[in-house]
Image (cartoon, rainbow, N blue to C red; front, side):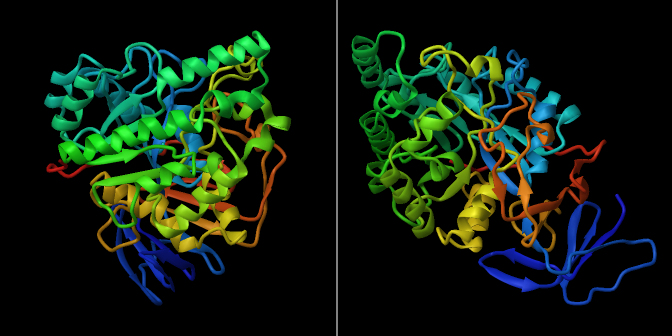
Amino acid sequence: MSDLLITGGTLISDGRQEQADLYLKNGRIESIGPSLSHSGNTRVIEADGKWILPGLIDDQVHFREPGLTHKACIATEARAAVAGGVTSFFEMPNVSPPTLDMERLEEKRAIAGQKSAANYAFFLGASNDNIEAVKAADPTRIAGVKVFMGSSTGNMLVDEVTALEQIFRHAPTPIATHCEDTPTILENERLAREKYGEDVPFQEHPNIRSREACLHSSSLATELAKREDARLHVLHISTEEELDLFTPGDSRITAEACVHHLWFEESSYTTLGSQIKCNPAIKQLSDREAVRQAVADGRISVLATDHAPHTWEEKQGTYFQAPSGLPLVQHTLLLMLEMVKQNCFSIETVVERACHAPARIFDVIDRGHLREGYWADLVIVNPDAETVVRNTELYSKCGWSPFAGERFSHRIEQTLVCGISAYENGKVQEGCQGQAVEFAKDRR
């Protein structure tokens, strides 16, 4: 690793903005200060007029490997991540076979150790019958324990109360939950079929994956966490009612919002249809505005993507055939910055929710901040240059985006992962290799 000096930029970290230089050595931030000196063989990046942010830590992605690699794989989606300013990702366990024990998780770590341009970590999945694997998990090697308290595939749905109690009692790490109530959803599907047959319009998705289904399940999760004194992180909040379950500053029970729930609302189904079909569903305008406000006031602690690519052909199916999920990771930071421009929240809030909070909540070691001694994961943003989304410029394997044609008000100039340039001049740099994210030992 060569030494690197970044000069003249505005650093945004830890709730403040300051103009300072960054000196990077051996992959870490060696020093921060004005007018730093350097030797003749130090590479210099002039960042005058640019913003320098910590690299984003996306705590929820689906990279589809192993078993679903016709949709995506760790290599392609990690490239999309660094192109979007995401330097670390936590990947979910609903692959094939599902990640229900440490052996499967280590297999994924090995793949990422060879092919991921971004730093990587993986969730261990919970099921109705793998409590011993959850108990035995190494807390330093997993992002957390993922519980699908709602519809899922294979053996990933946890719907037995006794199993949930055991998971919440014994998980050695934070528990991340997908909260939707399956019986409610199944009844709503029955009613939709009764009304429309198999030709259900996509506008019905928020009625089928309803607000009641979300609130019922999220309420159960928070109740269990309090009863068992577990650390709980509720993923992708989509309704106004759920926000009452969370308190700003609570370090034990936290919540996440995803960029698509902050950007789209129910009228978007008219033009985008299956492209924005996701679970939980994108709901009403009032829900979007309430979740945006919760990001600003701290009831929502984390911003993430739930990046979940499917092929374009798969997405062309009818309502019950088209899978849920959309590709997001390449444009997540641009979306957040666009909402800053719309005065939804401040850029300092974006950095807190997308960088600092994931590191704090999941006990990440030496990432998520611009601090001396930390790994040099950072992104340089030009606030005065636009980005037009074109499918021909996507890195995600699926090759499409719900934002195609969208014009964003900022441009990602460069992404560095552990001090190495992973993305610059509009291109992912060949040969960049991320590291395994390290976690503290005591995480209960």
